[in-house]
Length: 292
Image 1 (cartoon, rainbow, N blue to C red):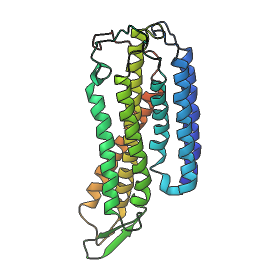
Image 2 (image 1 turned 90 degrees about the vertical axis):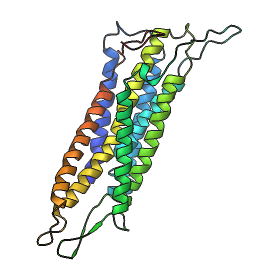
Image 3 (image 1 turned 180 degrees about the horizontal axis):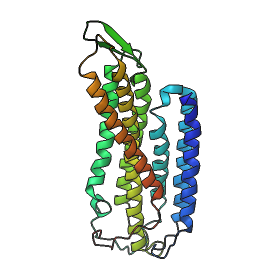
Image 4 (image 1 turned 120 degrees about the vertical axis):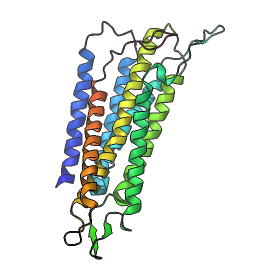
């Protein structure tokens, strides 16, 4: 029953996200530097996001319960792919016999605090490690766990987030991580557009906003499957090895994993809310200066 609700919930999120994105067009633009290509990039971002959601829904129908950890990272990866394509659509650099090249040193820290980069990478790394650990600990069928209980008996439980569930999720996680890192590098390293097409202040504001978006999406890509695996494992450990074979460590471990899982889930929701709430109002970074 729960798996049948996934396509509906994902579609509902898509409609809400697109509505909020469209509403952003009516916000005050007094402090936004002129950027004529902003509208096209917004369409590309959310268009690819819709493609990602469509693929996630299709995977839910084709894979069934095996897709439960795959849906979120795959859907959000579609948005990141659109963001990367939007960065590739930026106006071209100045051409001709004489070219003006900026000597400004552009690094990640110019557009976002370093800690957020490490939050994204820690979330993705933790998710990959937990998925792999659960896969190695699970049974050969990829969806069950067998544990030796205190009284010497063996207890099996499922569904365990083994390779049957974790394999597709790990594939989507790797895809999302690759897209996020490529987008970050493109945002920082792309050449300065022709000033006649896009001013320096507008270009810097665009880079800063894009960096915030890609990191918010990246954190959600990492935390969503991490929450799913932790909560699934906590559920299994909460009832495996019933009395008199109850193990002393399974109960406390289940509580700890449940707390961490809920924290990761709330973090994923907060990241998605942040992603949707980022408008076109980022303060520009003065060319040659640092963020205020």
